[in-house]
Image 1: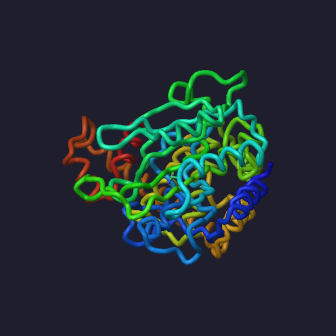
Image 2: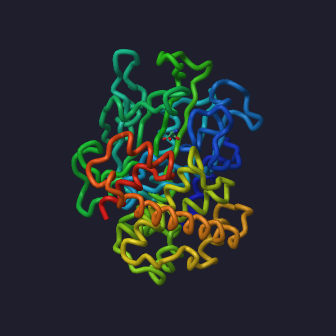
Image 3: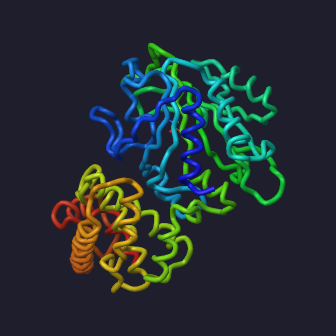
Length: 388
Ligand code: SER
């Protein structure tokens, strides 16, 4: 099942159950949100989760692009991406968590044909402030799906402050043999869908206050589920990455983990540029710059003459078209080349400065500050230059 078919099946299933489709927003969260990027489909909905009536009603469905940098070092494994798409559903003070899980089970098994024997669930075990999620556990028992209880892994929050609550998750078995063990003990159980019952809001002082209404917020990782449904062993082999996997190896010979990192980060950089983020030394622009520099570091390890200017325009077009962005592929390539040029100059300057006698031994905090403030050399760059 291709991803566009998967999206259609998902959206229609929820539309038949009274949900209205809302348009996904960009990677930039609404003003006042505590996060740098949209990391989940709920970000654009925060005011409505907190009680403001939504113009389209109490049942919503959408597809939202997200960016997560918390998983940066895991990119290259089978399941993590920086930019990914999340299929989401919401009940704004309408139906509760067990109805949501029941529909989710129906969609996965009957709608998408997943063998129920390959599913595992997790649910919130409760702690000293909040009760265990017995309603979800009873639902799982009725459906005959094994369920594991956890505390930290099944409490969802949107950063340090904001809406939060217990969640219950669907895991799908990705191993070759029959399912074994449980999601927290065996990572062949891949998390595909999180159903959060948003009951509380966390305040600046860390305290929890009940929300005016109980919401359900669910998020399903599109590329993860697509790769499992397509019988692929990693997200990089699902159809979304087809052009990347076809065209990048023609340009550059890379081992599999490096190929994954290059495809993931470059695709994310294109999406960020398409959402109007520009390279900078702080905030969102720094994330873009960092992703690009990680790509260049990998490419230049083998051959310093490699250049992003060689990237086929078609590849950029495929990505901006997929995310329905208005930016011209030629402008993306120009900005990539400019940023590459800047990084090359910075590396040359850095190498030169680090040959000074003062920097031959271990570096002090003061050295790092001086190199950063006077010469624009970030700490991670200094560290990698000294390892060359
Ligand atoms: N907000 C939840 C998550 O990000 C469900 O969408 O997992």
